Length: 491
Image (cartoon, rainbow, N blue to C red; front, side, top):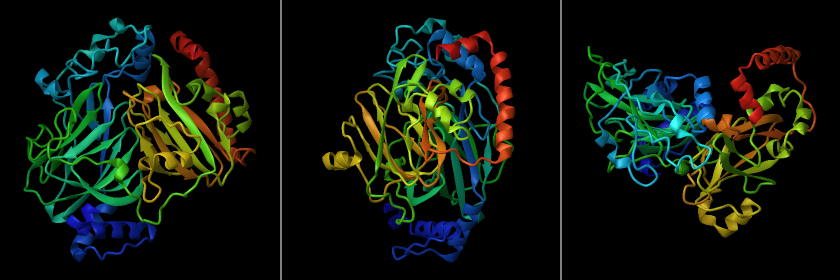
């Protein structure tokens, strides 16, 4: 609640935007705001400015996957970070990377990547890092492509920034020079506002934040950095109070910046701690008990396979009928890939990241869930209730975040776990997967069969479309390249 006490108008923001869209109200006894401030916030919320960030490679996905198969080395070195589809190649001096070197990454390439022969990242004997293409890992080219410009006016008083990470690989940390952010929504759900200077977005996650438009006229750098151990890279955009002839052609000079190149949060600056988010309103609380517990052990058993349970969920499984249309197909799957439970179940999903794993941005389709627990320990209990009794400090059943993205902790030194709880409200075949493309393609996914004991009534036009898609898939399989066919058969 610190943000409320230091900036009372954010109380009005939470009340306003929530009441406007969901008919919720908030007691404003801790602070008031002038009517014009409230009106400005409402206007900003209803017309947010999009900030879509993503990592970018100068190769297509088929080349990328082919390199992975050929070298047994994940292609985890990107060329740039884009903001709203714009960005440039940046090759900083080697000294720029000094804050990040040491431990598992003693040296980096000109792109800021760990070297492909780094055994901390790829310890498998079948790896052939000597076969990687130089342009994928080592060749860095400076470019002068235009930068995205978000235009603002100080007379608007506030702007709402809708941030989404569309990356295929990396977490991205975002900040705007000189502009603290009041984060008030996560994954489309209102949360009590948090005042921060930077936010980290794993792939697939979304935040919405207010910024105060009270700075002198000029251009301010928007920074988007790959905040991960294997690569340190930053992309730029511009927040502009009045464009000039150079706006969008140069990176603005630092003005009270919050993150350095590569994503380190600078001294005295605040980074959002996502587990401290509290769903708004405070009546959005999790059930206090669950009647289904599913534990998934996240791990990797070779250079090309990532696993969420005992077996990988490979892409070729989707060449048959969709499980939603024909749930009987599930009988041909490994049961661990298609767990079943009825509508009305209160489900605890326990994600156990086995030792040596990076963080995984897990996404579950369907309803949102409360992230009720997270800890740096193995999950050795049969149920969450047992875990809470043994280690209550790891859990929050009072006011946890309510999200559809579940970012696990890294487990480099030891196993870690993340727990989320949800109520099944309608039947469906719900896919849950890692949002890192290579991990999803490598098999890190399951389909949750929620209330699917009997076939659903499917509209005929969907069934017709499915039959047409079968023919497309058959032609695709028939015409598949020998290399792609070999990858499928090796899965």
